Length: 347
Image 1: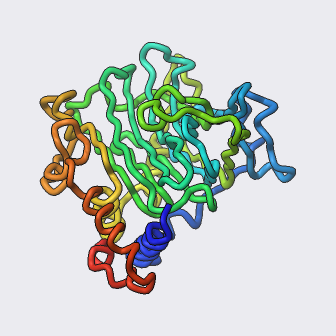
Image 2: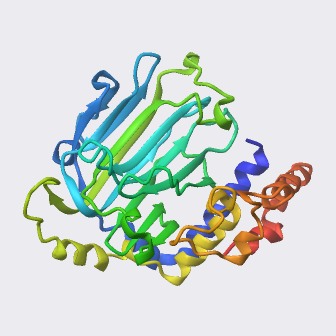
């Protein structure tokens, strides 16, 4: 990453923080955090799952023999799933770190899922990631959005969170809501509705993760290490196959009363700017896959104008303009970064 790009992203981060103000920071300062033993269990790759001595953090390793992962000890009928995460550094092409909810182990053909997947990168290139959701086994209707991050997630921990209630789903990165899905009746069973557990994994996805599989995992850089801490799990803990459904109304009321369950005006502005600047694919604008947008899609004219029929940014669009601007700015003194008019208009 160029010196300009790094400092430009720092400046963007500062603008986001300042624009959100104190009210938004409250959403994640009063979380009930748990130890690994209290809330989680090893899933696979036991030797590559390393818990800290105080049991408040865990490292997931990927080497040429195996990846690793953990799962929440309970399944939840709606919930808030959150962790501070630091991703592997240097060359990580082909490596995927996933933080997601699922019930695929219980409902194999009708499973629900909410995904945050970090897609490995070539050293010096920005990390990219995607969010997705499935309901009732609707895997043939992928609802992917892909983005770039405005910071280097391998340098320090950042909080990634998923809120799931009967009425909405919100994906958060730190205090920035990056995606909101509002349930409507037309979604039917495509809206996740069955109890889900939290999963975190690191694994080799060389066949698709980086530039469609062009760049593979290189185990010269192994082990690849993802670190997790400050786990927060709130929701109605249930047995997914119990005959008499448990009443989870109090838990839902609690979730919907929390700051992370609503998006204030400052946060909504931050979400809009994030999506304008860092989202590079959206299924809602992919008319080749879906000639008619899926029912939860909210078509934003300013977003639609940026995408072609494949749901990807148009050639010469925002990313191309940003690359050209970056090349021009690389020839200027570093102090001029703050005078970039596009950055002043971010929020």
